[in-house]
Picture 1 (cartoon, each protein chain N blue to C red):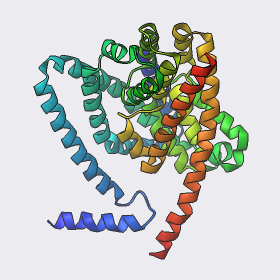
Picture 2: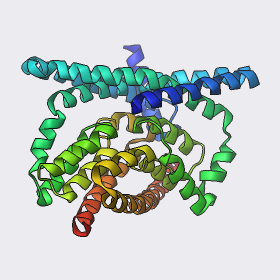
Picture 3: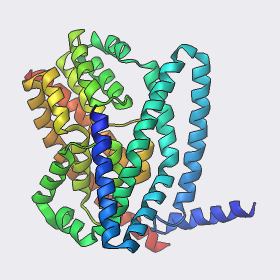
Picture 4: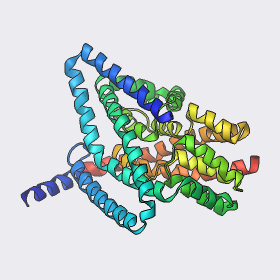
Length: 201
Length: 162
């Protein structure tokens, strides 16, 4: 009982403060555990109803699980190293607001490098944001990572043809840059109002 | 095969990085490991959710079924269906392109193919829990929402151009 009360206080306290590290995590944790239990129950029910799909489902989960096990620890260690060794100043210089079009280009370029699946990029993006990178650059980085991968394009070329690939790619790049700038505008417009409401309280 | 490459490269990077870091500064390296551990723990529930969702999706929507469902659809509804399917499914790109090619072969239009590839790569419905955890709800929803609109836009443009 006591513990619950404590948690509640922490949550409400955190809603007002802007410090994301404080108690919001307990709230998020609770939420995600509820979601987790719900999804597992649903999954068990569905698989019980359709036993013919059970093997394929379990196999797919297992494959992804192995992929996670092999990739995520390394990703997390790299994140940790990044957080300790790369200073805020460097990130701000190369990906911050003053970085301008060079920053956009760098974000695009790094995102295109042959790396792993998109979920690896989320912790990276969040780290870069915390260290002062521009929102637009982060969105461009994530989108490039998602759909403008160099090795992936070779496969696209082979299966879909040169014309398809070039047209799709060039439009995607243009759109991604525009999207980055739009999302940044929205973020910046929403942020001041958020921090001012915090100050009022 | 692509996955194996990723695994090897990223682990080599991590091992080299952490070794070099320990050589340079033990204190900082321990701190880095602590950050890594904390990150892993806070991500754990999201990871389990993803595992379960992917299992269900892949168990029920096998590639052949997708290509049958979307293959003979064209027009705006085909694009809509392909965008939604691409957003929800999580398929490695090595499988995705042959699958898309087979969509076209079984009668889908170029627009449908483009919509499918674009949402498939850009939008991760299944990885939403992870993305929200790292980047927050607003940024995640904005990114995925606008990407969806962009995908439909690109699909329409490509339908006109090709």
